Image 1: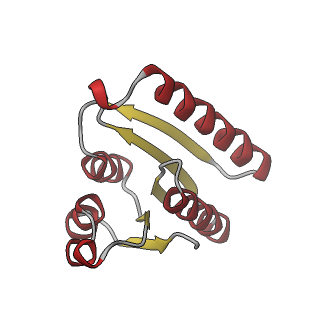
Image 2: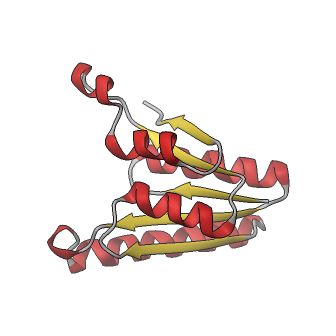
Length: 133
């Protein structure tokens, strides 16, 4: 079994990671953590270093907790939803965990393009987790 989790260094990303770790422990399965960035001008060197430091901390934490894992930082010009779906297909994921954040009334209509795309196009079930207040 494999669980794929979309991670961003925000409350919704941390909530998704926490839940994915719980599920990995419960199911005795491997966890693949994905941090996806489009790159280019949207990701400067400072942000890339910040993400890499945070992902190192996640690796260290998962090592300490004994969770079998792989952490990937993807910067290949794709939307985060595309990366999550592609990795889920590649590893034969049993399910994907994503985090959601509170949205404005208009945003609620749309849900969020990446979350919506993962929910609709994923090759496996998707667990959507709300960020804590």
